[in-house]
Length: 451
Image 1: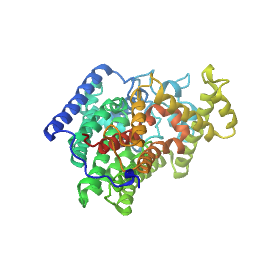
Image 2: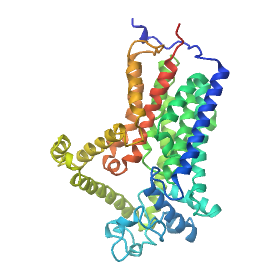
Image 3: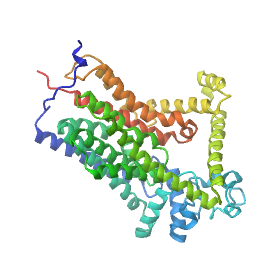
Image 4: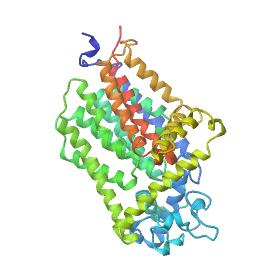
């Protein structure tokens, strides 16, 4: 029998515990330094890399909340309100020449929403806009760097919690490898000071992953507050956005597979709870959002129609992207493939969105993943090979199952909502942090001392 098919044996430390802990602190300190430099580089306006489009919308919505109250317009954000960041965000594309809102943006809303100061945005939940308004009520909305300290601090605390959980579960020496690999990944940094949902959502994801590590590796029986925390994290994610649904729902799956591969069998019931609780919290948040939209539009039927119209807009966006493809693709394989799928908006969107993911992953100018992704792929190939360079794992099937589960978790949003990904791939590609993290963790826990 291939020795790779045996359960993982206890692994000896790579170096002294005191050295490992100092190294882990040094990695975290490097993360803090990088974020301080990044915060200074962003400047006083909306971010170039932290989704400045959505940040501009959030600032206008915060202005509206501060003027009329958080409960105004059923709590929905007015992202076209006022005159802040006039040339950025949704405002340039949704106004007619006379300053009123375009019909496509308000067709299911009351007539008063033709006024851009009244118009509400229904597609995303209002969480990020409310958080910005709350900060603005305390320190004002003019010092953007100061406002960025909240999501940045939450992300740093989430990263510290994750690094500590890794150290307790696998040892500080293995935690250094995972933490170092995370700090080297550009997408680990870019969203942290973001003032829309990305920074907050990433912090919550890091906390959720930390709790899952503790559930599966550290505590034989989880404290009751952990289960409540998983529900609460799901609710907060649902209050912030809808993009993270599959990530927060299924991230427990590869953790469960990895722990079982080590010979510590975890019950399917525990996995089911780790999935169901965040999903329940997420779902309740979106039911509440639907009721908010129903209150503003006048009925539940009109609210549902509003979301259907959003789906139609995504389809129109697909056609527009196809019409404006770069010349190099007008007669290439991509154009041919799009022509073969032109009868299906879904398939057209899937082809284009998949192309965007591949381009973003490998193009040097798209700094979310490059140049770290090629290194991760190299790690994957090493893991599949025989134990060389001191690396061993429980078996090729285990590597495939863990990595495959993590990759599917990251790509399900692409498969389910390709038209949305088409316009937001710069945000949704961050889901690929999940398989990257598990490649790092599998490598770190598979290392053994040689000699």
